[in-house]
Every structure is written in C-alpha cells, then in structure tokens.
Length: 164
Image (cartoon, rainbow, N blue to C red):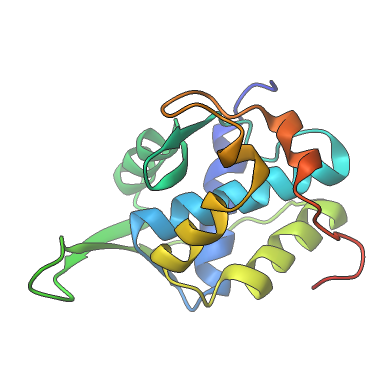
C-alpha cells in the first residue's frame, strides 16, 4: 500500500469539512467518509488517496492513522474538536470544525472523487454510513479487527462514471 501522505490526508479532511459547512459531526462519520474516499479512489485508479490502512471494526471500516492525523491537525490549529452531548443516552459527539482553509492542490480526478463522496454521503449520519459500509464487500469479506484489503473495492459494484 502506498505510504501515507500526512499533508494530503489533512487536506482531504479539511476539504470534506469545508464542503460540509465547515464541520464534520462525529468520528464515525469522518471515518466512513474517508473510507468512501479511499475505496472509491482505489476502485477507479487502483491507489488510495490518503494511503491509510482500514480495519474492520464493529462499527465498520476505521482508518488506522486518522486519530493521529486529527491530533496533529488540532496542534497545528487547522481544526478544533468540540464535544457535544446530543442525547442523554449517547456518548458525546466529536465535532471537527475547520480553522484553516484547505490549501487544495488536488488533481481533477481526486477532486471528482472527493466531491462525489460529499454529494453522495455527506448528508448521512455516522450510523447511516456505518450501515452502508457493513453491507459492502470489503467489510463483509474481512474478519473482525483485521485489515481490509483495498482490492476488495472491486467487488463493491460502484458505478463511478455516472453516479454522482
């Protein structure tokens, strides 16, 4: 798998947050959006956009390096993290707010995939995204807590040409 480009990874997070009104509500939602970005990109171009590795955790695919990247972004004052209690019987939601604009130098192909993910999945909740990823071949075909092989992206049946 390609090496992680921390700069590109951070730019992807900033870009997604900007396109979603300046924030991403929930760690689960961010993890699933990154999964769709990477697996859609791999399905079309046979490489990952962030270079991260995903584990098949109980709540769906989870990027192994995401929390370290987020911690770095907080230190660099690129994002802030706020905890909001939305319901008494739930854990508080982590809200990632942008503090800096993305310095976008994405290729046209990268931008198309990012915009597609925002359009197709950005309005969904973390739980809805969890349910979608649980129904996909990469998650189904991976033993619990194991690394999800990017090659399983080819079994998702995604129409990346016409479906926005």
